[in-house]
Image 1 (tube, helix red, strand yellow):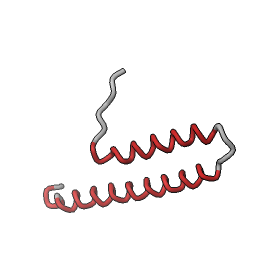
Image 2: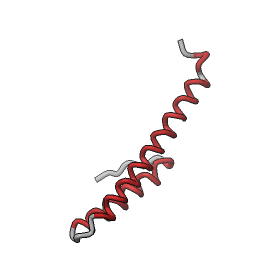
Image 3: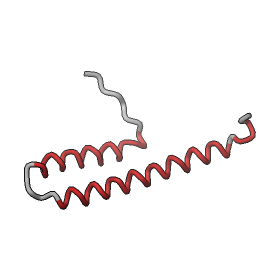
Length: 70
């Protein structure tokens, strides 16, 4: 199986998702579901922040090239 290279800015996101998946697998075998809910809420908050950064980056790029766009 060939693996794709992960872009450097997305490495922390992929590590966080992998960590939550691993935690979800371990928790699914136990009765401790409360901690998983908190971790999922934190992950969603982080994803919202990352999405905000992407929007800001795209907005800045468009504004920087505004004169050349027709």
